Image (cartoon, rainbow, N blue to C red; front, top):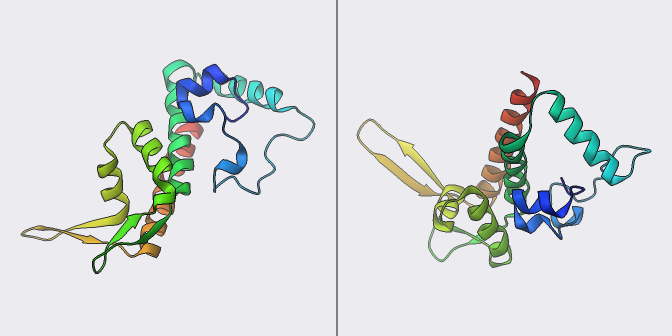
Amino acid sequence: LLCANDEFKSQVWEGLVNAEIDDFFYLSGEGGGIEGLEDEECWEFTLKALGSFGIEGEELLTLFKALVVILLLGNLQFEAGDGDHTTIVSSISSKNLSALAQVLNVPEEDVTTAVTTRKVKTAREEINFGLSVSDAHESCNAFSKEIYYILFEYLVK
């Protein structure tokens, strides 16, 4: 995806246009690519492979938007909030939070709530409680893995 042309990147998410591999925690340290092929060739190979499964157009964009969501979730960092059992998205992650909300097309507050709280339903009520910093981080990782799993299942069916 990072090897795509700028026009395609901007269709997926404008923030990809100048992005590099080290901009994403989940990719940092990865070599990437296919040995013996240039980045552009890898991208064309990827598009051709996905096209052979009929994944093109809007479906292709949706697939790559899901991958961007995974990458942005991996970039979120957390810190303790003011009250007991409160966690907030760290200010150094504010751009990633905004980008994630943009890609998901939801308000930032909804993303923050989703990654820093847990909802438990009992027989009579729903209870929201705050996650610890480590639990919020693990929740993001688990959500990323679930999205990745769903994408993988979709591609192999």
